[in-house]
Length: 287
Image (cartoon, rainbow, N blue to C red; front, side):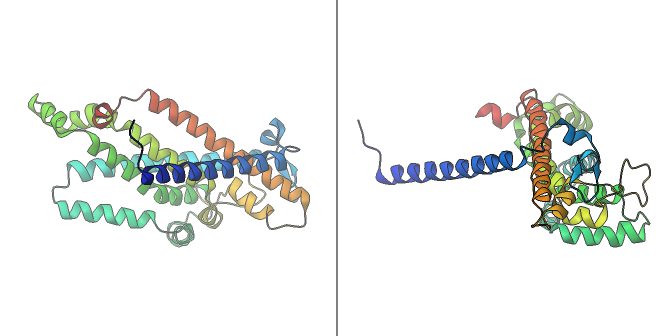
């Protein structure tokens, strides 16, 4: 039996050590989260409204505001990203222009949240008159997370083999039929993956949200598009963690972090279900 090269053994050992270190950090974080929030984390914490200085009651409206911003921004971004990806791949004939658009989207995705927040306040809040509202925050979040979904969608479209496209064209299928019945079903897994990454960013974004949409208290269910802010989990955590001397505020912050984690896990579960029932792309079949 041939012995494995020393470099192979070293690489395998280093990989195992990195994986063990990452898992230890993850489990340590989860254990700390569970121990710090055990006294407050319950069903009532999800359902009761927050009162007083943020350490009484639950996070009903913070949870509602976060879900509104996350769902609206994700659906908007997914729609924009799908349309942009299809346009770039099937309607933009000039390769240099297509690459330029992709690079522009990449640079937009790399912009920090605080910059997006300033742009949202100046353009949507002031110029368009939306003010500080959930619509402003959802629009800014949609633009922030759109590049992630866009690149995942582009990767999915490129995964469809050229032979498959040539066969569809040889059968006389129109471009629209190829897009809706061939391309989109086969890149659905990539779209779901990009959307999951975007949901995590949208649910946890703080700087852009607190500038465009969030208030600490007083917000309930939004009823309009203008000057109608919401309470969010991320901004609630940010404010509570500023009071280091208040043990109850710190416990509330830990419990609120647990709620954010539950939201992300719920979306991961939904995304995993959708990925399982999505048809594989051509490169997945070949692998």
